[in-house]
Amino acid sequence: MTAHNRRVAGPVRSGLSPARHVGAPTAGAPTAGAPTVSPSRRGTCVHPVARLLCPHLSNVVPTYRTPVEPGRRHHDRLKPLHVGPVSTQGVRSPSDGTGTQMTERFLVTGAFGCLGAWVVHELVTTGAEVVTFDIGQDDYRIRYLVDERDLTRVTYCHGNITDAAATAAAVRDFAVTNVIHLAALQMPFCAANPSLGAAVNVLGTVNVFEAVKNSPATERPIVYSSSVAAYDAIDNTEVDLPALTGRPMSHYGVYKFANEANARVFARDDGLTSIGLRPHVVYGVGRDQGRTADPTLAMLAAARGVSGEITFSGKFQLQYARDVARAFIAASRATVDGAAVVNVGGAIVDSQEVAAAICAVVPAMADRISVSGEPLPFPSMLSSDGLKALIGPVETTALKDGVAETIDRFSRLIASGKIARHGGARSDGSSAADGVTRSR
Image 1 (tube, rainbow, N blue to C red):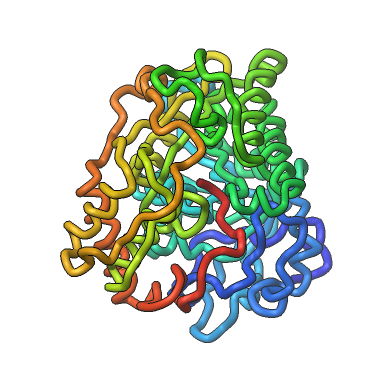
Image 2: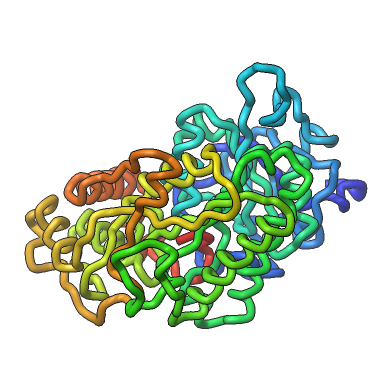
């Protein structure tokens, strides 16, 4: 990388080579939104000057399409095939008035998290153009789901959501028409580092709204991830937003509640439309972190043939990640006035039912999936009528079908070597508890 590229943000890559690796990252991957790259990765997968470049994007953006021979490391591919303004040919504003079908280009922040990976998967499999915006250095969750062939439609933009200039430049320079904002630190990481949690989850969301101003993306609602954690378990669970008082019992929940309030201010003062979706307990391949990841980790344990545990009890709404991703995409294409906040529907189950569903798929796991702990500290169910009013019927995968598909996907990933047969959720058997996840 030559000196003249020092104005440019970190790596922007389109269609990563399959030679990268077949598994998930090594321990020490960077925390979402963190201002620096983890030292353990600086000498492995990060270009020597990438840390100086990451915080700033400009109108001059390199795109990396150079094939990588087997055995070459990630930073070896950071050689631009072309340096210049990102082409916007074929990208038209939703209000261009030409009468021609608009070409959509989605910006997905936090795309390397579980929900982000599923959103990318659903978009590229239907032919949409996707730009990812993530501080992470590894797309292993996306590779769990997306075929190499479809990765050619994904442009990777390395950036920090807490950097307002970088976020704005990503929206502007890639001629983004739709924004799905998922970048966030999850509940355990917000509890461990409230200051960083507030910077990523609140300031990062404000930066996204600011970035959309005066861009073609204003023609579509900003869609962002809120959470059921914005409300306490004592809130009225029989009705939707108007009767909920909002008494979150965690830093994470407070940050999500603040985002909903900020969205209303942006609607009033700037005319920005938005839809905040509140997922509950999301499960599926890639959900390897967070307070409510246990159902997925128990399914992974079943695929490995080892004992698993769900460490919370009680009732909750269990939502298959693919269904939630499709709801976010549909919301991005919806028409809304002002700032809407809606709940994502799902089957109301308890932890024992989930354990039983896992054992039904893998009978050998009978009595090997245990349940312990207290109920989750937020409402056990919320109405999804608001979401249905915006996007129409909401797809809900039956528990038995979602569990079966998840275990099957895990089994195939294990057989291919992309996930280890023993240990944590990564290919090398380590856990994913280092804070790399970007979305619920």
